[in-house]
Length: 443
View: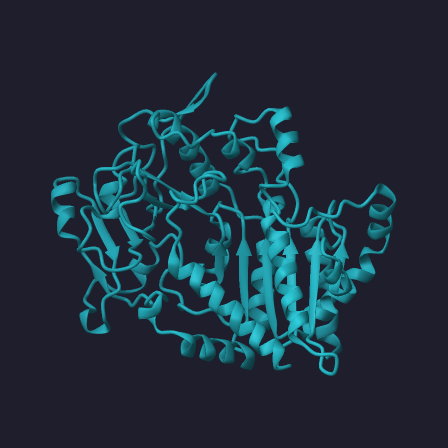
């Protein structure tokens, strides 16, 4: 688990809150002068949509009862699709676009990442404007009047009349985005998929997966490694509230759009048993590859699910490659680094799942298992940057930890580079944004 979070007493919290304006000024100055930005987003920013205290107790993991399984995950999937993303993403998106896109450092990061490995060595091939229609679709949805388009990784020579902005606009995520990140990246333990939706999946590492991605749920493990797909935009599970929790009856889903345009990861769609759309035509979706096993969310369903979760190799390796490149530039003294951490604290009470009780939530908060991954990554990256320098040429790194309850550094070696901004996330980001505006006016 790593070091336990540093828990300040009430007097320290009050002192930090009193000095929050000065910390926001320093944080803005650090971001304004930074060349590379890593944003880490934890459970505290999740607004209670998904609860790992439930997952750790086994709720939502038993696929022997699909009515209950899809009742749990289907309801949470629906909630994440309906609920707007946290306001914090607006500030993060603005800063990344204005300050870290199109810079010389961003170009250098992309160049080095390209030299570090070819797509054949693990990085996904960028999607082109090519679209393939699956032959299986005619049989699966014949007579329904639906149009189903699956996005392949075809070459430019295969472009046809189906490519274009209209088709691309149907995608739930920006899967046609660049395959390499530039001068910023996001690392998150949230599984709501909002970071990828708001910032682009090519710059987001979801270390526990996402409820927006689905995979094979065969009892012995997924039928294909690193195979996941996004649920069609506009799809919604039909779930019913009962005294025992949410149940999803077999049959027709709540909503199924007439047009499905879904990215097909790791290859074209022609080698799959089903299209994604056909896999999601019922309230109990099935695996697109084997067409036999039920589909499940491609996320970590609790601590013992590592073998069952089909993590996407390209996203994991892309972040690892970006991390190495950023550390290399910092070691050479060519990049000043800022780590901005948001939500590095326990998740708020989870209303939608309806399974939590107060005792279980207290136990989950006490264990620290469900929400410390982001704090550990923030400090690990910052400390590695620090260690890459020398006494003569120290590396430049600042960790801006935004937390209303746990703003202190956990590692002694990280304390010197940590700015503890003891404020709610949106309030803190608004304060930093105002200071960034003032710095811009000063020239």
